[in-house]
Image (spheres, rainbow, N blue to C red):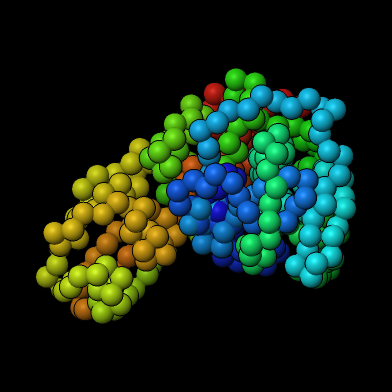
Length: 337
């Protein structure tokens, strides 16, 4: 929320973060949508985050666009809230509300800066493309108003808001480019220790959305999960009979070490299909059948392409700056202001 033309994903204990577990918006990361439709932001800003990151967190399209001229950028953003109220705010204040919804406020300020720059890039690209969002499902929210944040953070509001405000102000006006065009600034919650390439996930190649190491994610609370299903449930989903003697074999993996193809019985599926079918958190999984049950263990949370939120926080805690972090997850790019 969330693997999306930009989107996201969040964390397990993220009460303070004001984000749902991946979005992309979630990552919630499926094939790339041409246009995101999660918020009703009338500045022609699309976004995508999903709760389970089936596409959470941003998607990438094939098109490249030139940077818009500064004088063409809208100064204000109109956001339609769930109750129909329209909030009008400065663009940078809008970015604060999105960062507060996308990443836990407890994260290191350098990680929050990476989210701010990625978010700004995503929305600037969307504005340039003339996209507008419609409120399809406010449950997959990617923006929090000040009143909402006060309710969520309570006595911690001043501390958390000031922290995010600092991250946005310290990166004011900064965005990421490749060949002088806005990048597809996709992001997600957590990976399996390595990011995915956009080619493996969405079939589109971008020189800056390639697989890179991300060992910091392994320590994230959102890293490992186990799903257990009775065979009759799995059989109804798969559409054929699976029993304790059915073999499941992973045939190939992606550059990010996720499942590319898996054979269950005599049927071959893509890892992406199995993820969507069983609503898994990622495509890096182990698939075991025993005792009339299917046990699936997943690693990571989201589509795995681009910026890892937990990886970003891990790098920040080790002393990396937001620029170094963005250069790592979006190689071959540059930051402009």
